[in-house]
Image 1 (cartoon, rainbow, N blue to C red):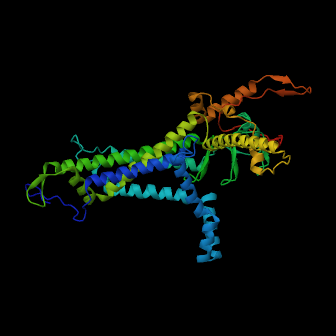
Image 2: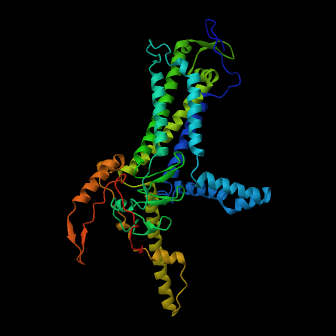
Image 3: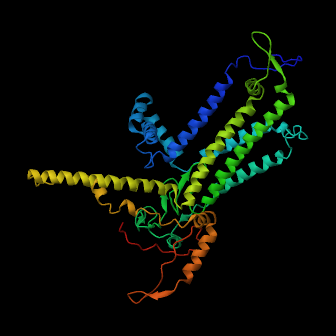
Length: 454
């Protein structure tokens, strides 16, 4: 198409996708991304588990379970043989269940390729007509290096951070952090580490170590997220979300400056039936995709990734604000589900027992292991309270400033009065169980002596 005045607007002849359809595709992709994220995070909640999101999550679980289950591997074994199938299992175990540098290398690749594309195609425009209101300031050159440098630094910090590893040397200090709520956490030994497992801790099977206030194991940082590095993980999500959003908006401003400098909206194009018509937004977008495809693709990718990271950031900030962890959310869900299942089981047992008595049947039916497990639960739904929630401000301080919080806990523990125990020996009052930080002075060399009752 040629504009009035003889100036030509080069367009891809094969690009005949209408702009409303292109916009619809973008909206559909963004909506599906948000729906998938929402389903993965909240589909198993008590509000959605019997609804549409719960059913979708169940379908996704069954789909993933098929490719990790025995039926799939039996099919593969018939095709490629047992030796090749065993190699596949070893690769799967290494990638998903062992510490490895694969995902950090993927991260480095994404950052390197993305910045290379940005430097090659966007860098020449960072001082583009900066004297004009629609121009691009050269100051963005410094911002680009600064923000990317911060992202890499925080990424390395997460890789090398201590999430709160519990050892024989600091287990006694860790036991002072949080009390046992006797719902999710009771005194029990870690059968791998061979010492008492402090409240809110968990043994990570990937890292093969107990972690204080365990949240989850993140393959992107090849490390656990725990009480000592949750603030670093939040920084990781926040700075990368900002980087992607900033890069996407900057690319959008660059494309606007290019369109304005060329005066595309002042041009006219020939119609297929003859005559001229003003350049529309659809024509401009097709021209940008044709002439600046790497910029358009990178900008769309950055905006989508920033949206995903921002949702995860807000989710983890919510968990911090109510002083719970990803691991504990699953525990609470399981506990609520078990209590409801127990109540239904007891009603069925009562009805069955009444029916047997009416028939004069004195035989007791055989009880399954699952039924015994459910009947052993003594808690009610009203008992499920998060005793670690101390208010939003205190919860944020506990997660974002762990060193300061733990120092306060230790001062309070040292100032606790000494009183006589019943047996005549002197013991210290139970130390306050608040805070979440690195135990700086644990020197105990012996294993913690605990009861093995659960």
